Image (cartoon, rainbow, N blue to C red; front, side):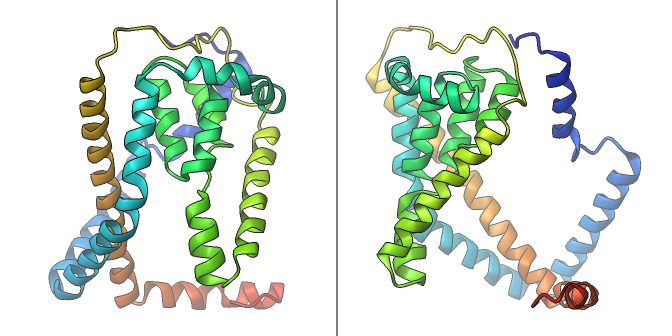
Length: 261
């Protein structure tokens, strides 16, 4: 059960309802926009089939091999109930910096090593297991949505900037940025009397491994579907000159601010 929140925390929770389709006008607008997308796909489906396939190829060749081991292993680590021992070491730091529950130290450490979206995944798992409240999950997400060293040093540093040293500088800046963001939100999303301890249960290693693989595969399939979908939507918006229209729309603003588009 979720804990009793203070009045200030309850008000901050309203931020999460911003995109809820509670308004009839909003639902009509989204529905109309969805119909336009379907018509656009139906008129000439060939390029969008190709873009969807391209998205799936990117997922299978880049995202899947990079995230699958981390997803399975972090799920196993959570299920093995060794989090409390880890938290006892780093929790004083996260409590001092972020005023966050002890378990956030574990999520923060794994998010730095593994990269996005492992931090978000672990936060969701801890919330589902009743280890943190809804507001604590929101607070933890402010400093655990980090890219991993594999992407920053390998892809950005070596692959794009041709400099391993630049990758390390960007990685350090990225981590410090996450810490700074967590410090900024340390007085927000406050709840009381959280459990923050893993309930001790009998451990079946075979079952834990099987469930970890099953859960991770389902989650990664969802990630792959999102990637393929947004590749298709991007192709659709490009083909129907939506981006070109938005560019022309914002040119006067950029010129006024003396910014390059």
